[in-house]
Image 1 (cartoon, rainbow, N blue to C red):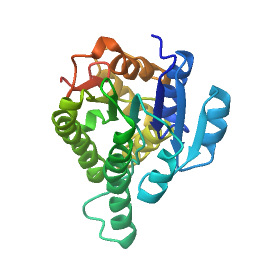
Image 2: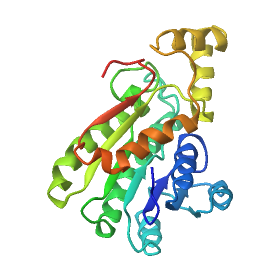
Image 3: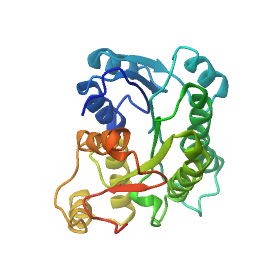
Image 4: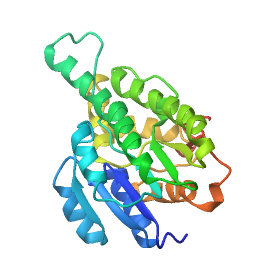
Length: 249
């Protein structure tokens, strides 16, 4: 696919799936603006020939300042997210703070970035949100994250209706288990809660997939690039599962 001459904004691009997506678009010639709330995004951007921006997407002022530097946006990828345990029975102040922060980043941050990007977008623009297989199912102990990923699917459907008259397509991708720092941390916590080896839990997860093997971040790039391309001109309001058949969609 060719994205020469197109400006692509990707949040949460310093590592994991976001970086994998960025590598794909960089190879396809896109002009990239990579956002994250840690300085590593600047280094990643330099490697990819992109522009890196350290931005807290939950800060509307910071988001507004960022978009002042971008003349237009062809593709917006809302990928930034936080995944942590939030057991319902944990009533500590820290647990509440983590719950609020997850919702703030995953939902409110996505809203703020999208709202502020809209004046920079024209007909033919694409908005792609990162949900999760957990956006369609429940997972014990991860209520905030699961709720946020369900919310992303709801936002995707709503914004597709709202922005359709402007010729802007809005879709979501729901990755399954991908080898990232966040997913491996969750795997470790889940295994500890079940008093089982991480390798045994991973085998259980991979057995539940129709296709074997654990995905790498780079495996996600093609899915986002497809939805950003002319081939997806008639697709909007949809959530595309990229999970090797783990969850029937």
